[in-house]
Image 1 (tube, helix red, strand yellow):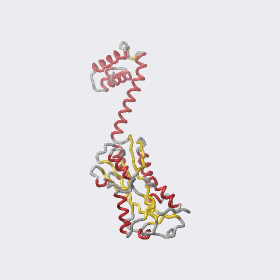
Image 2 (spheres, one colour):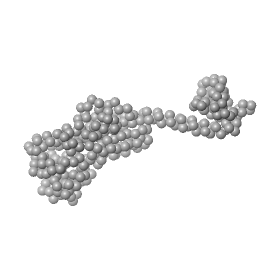
Image 3 (tube, helix red, strand yellow):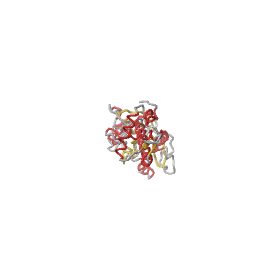
Length: 300
């Protein structure tokens, strides 16, 4: 049994004519009658009463028509879904993002995309910057949002797009001597214990080196009393008076100044964190193309 046999059968049954069914599919009447005869041999019973004019279905034919139409509807639906998937209307998108970035505008972007493409499943994964980069190169993510601490922009296999530049904020507990300041310079933090938020799991990435260079340019080596890539743990320790921290504004803006925490802008054009999106140049997920076009209008 094949799909064409079912199509010819349904067409003949609905038109009550082999000739009309043949015209519908631009084939000869002989071809239609041969295919329907083959179908009857497969199911083992006559489907048409050929003695009547016009032709009519037998009781078995009437029963089979219901199932045949249901089968064709499912086949057509499957073909439509395949076509939609091939151009990114349905499917899935695996998004990796750096720790702390859950408080950014990313969720709004994903929600807007899903509103446009409701049949796409967006799955999100929170990880360290180095783990995100490695996972992207292994094909575990379709796109990642991260600090470029592993210099993905230099990798010939990836495409990167600047997403935002976030100023660094100094987080202090509310009773700290610096809490009343409107702005601070890195050089003024020389004597402070630093709760260092590292972009990587090792603390030895290119991103880490960049921040250590900023301390060196300010004339000192930082007194790092604790390091972590978990912003919430660092903020808990800041509130407990264990030290101060420098955090991107996408982490601090959702908290705001409270009775326990105060966030002070750090002066200097270089005192920022650059967030990029990165994806594989040879990625074959059509949903990814839909997403990048949706967010950036096809920019690269």
